[in-house]
Image 1: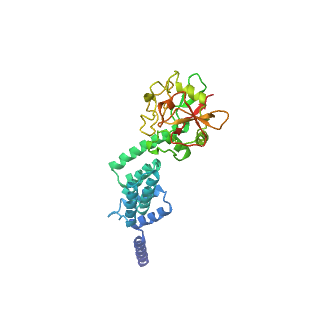
Image 2: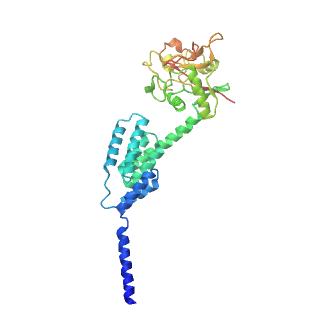
Image 3: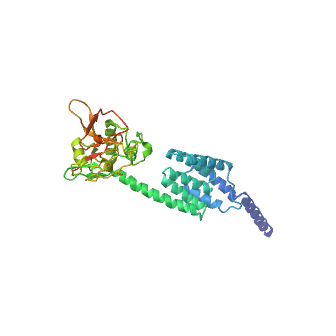
Length: 346
């Protein structure tokens, strides 16, 4: 009986040793988890487990050649990037590097950097948190996380403001309000998804131009759908009353054209950011100069011409006068034609 018990104990020990011998090593577990990640690339919890396991391995797991190649491609794309789309392309390469070597802290850092430049701040923060796990104590990662959080919060504020519509000024004694500025290139792009302006290098706060009366109507329709408000072009009478700003001045805001308007002699042959010149008495900017502004109404009852007011960067002072009227067909576009919006108040 005793010999039988000894035999059973011996056999149990042999089986136990055999099972231990066939158990997965940490390195094998790592490779298995990497394989699982290929099927679920958005599983950040799995990425965290991989990073934690890799940190225990001695020596550290080798970075595969494929990951290094992806990093090099991403770096080249990032260096040559000039647009959001370019940064997205760089991010795709860095993302592939993290899939090949999910414990690679530098790949997560570069991915987060590229995603931030591509204005995908939430994704950037997720990537940078993983980079922080892989490279604990890195001051560069901590600093970038702070910057991305700031840009994310700022972008959210801007988005909320844009959802409210353009900045408006209530006209004293009247039941309507006018755009504080001419519609900008950024506002146009946010609504229409493109920028038709000749002077697109002028910047986001420069007035959109090279738009027809018909284009302005399409913009306003989409703006109204986006904001739930009822914007429109101003009537000529509304525009002129708002232009004077409470005083009968030669130009919209004063008698010195250079202080209130960008026109032929001071524009340098281009439009300029909104709000750089002196406002009129109601706090409206650039009603004289910068770009001609489309009116809602026709020039007369005999033609389909639409009215333009205010003059532009390309005009002599006489055309920027408060009382000057211009007209053209509603389908015409020119790089001195823009607009501002109005809205009837309850």
